[in-house]
Image (tube, rainbow, N blue to C red; front, side):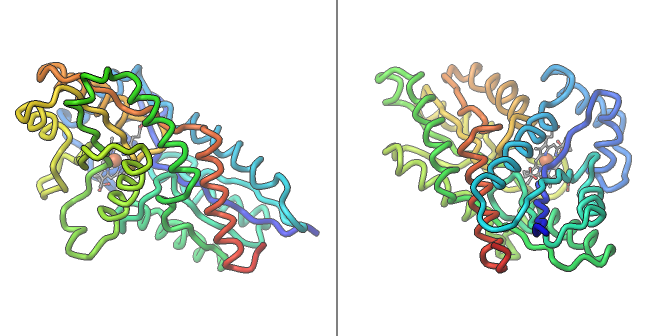
Length: 313
Ligand SMILES: CC1=C(CCC(=O)O)c2cc3nc(cc4[nH]c(cc5[nH]c(cc1n2)c(C)c5CCC(=O)O)c(CCC(=O)O)c4C)C(CCC(=O)O)=C3C
Ligand SMILES: [Fe+2]
């Protein structure tokens, strides 16, 4: 009999349509209903990107390609099945865990479609998966904690950066700032020595070095609308400051994200682009990795490394 390894591929989730925005938002807020203004504002953002986000469809493509890649040329009698588990919409992480337990998986490896670890992002996915596994008496669940320096990930991002750089003239490049961005988190993560900011800088440094462009900085984006302070500087403030400092071009590389979704299609393509226009800055961003074969390879390499560590391969 083949050994059956389940891969739990986790992503944020998205509402399937505008009618589902409210329940999605309530789930993000752990059961608290948003005010009408908050809900309308979020619906407005989804409307602005065409009604819904492509995140689910892209995640399905990634899952399919990953399963194919893992089962290609694998040694011995091991078979991989990829299960999608979303944090905030169906199929939820616990649904995926129930399914692979029901399917008789011998072991499971979890990975989040976000390369950098934070206790408030990837850590929460892991906790939810562990709780679901525990509830079903499944004990062989391991995780890829972060995969932010996987060579194939850097290859894919480097190619995106080189392509986008080509859209600026040599004259523009003299006043161009390369900005790496990622989803902000509440500033209190710093008190706990969270690795998130440093891992993001590691990816950013590696990429700037690869393309030989030293005029870069980091910015946070998509901070939540809550009372507590979030990590800054925010990308919109950075655009203002760069304009003030005489920059006329910005290339943003959202290194913290993998797929096209609201935070890229709205927060960058609409909101940041609009701010840049006001400030007369030529703003571009690198294309999302989506189902890029090098992204799939990065996921495969990090999953097989954990399998080897655990003696599964
Ligand atoms: C670290 C991180 C990532 C990256 C890592 C990962 O991918 O996990 C991420 C991704 C995403 N976040 C997304 C959307 C939203 N996030 C919200 C709110 C929040 N995000 C948070 C963190 C993160 N979020 C946090 C701490 C909150 C505050 C509430 C809470 O404590 O949980 C809200 C509520 C309203 C608002 O504040 O804007 C929305 C609509 C979508 C888009 C989905 C689509 O395309 O539909 C994606 C990929
Ligand atoms: Fe978010």
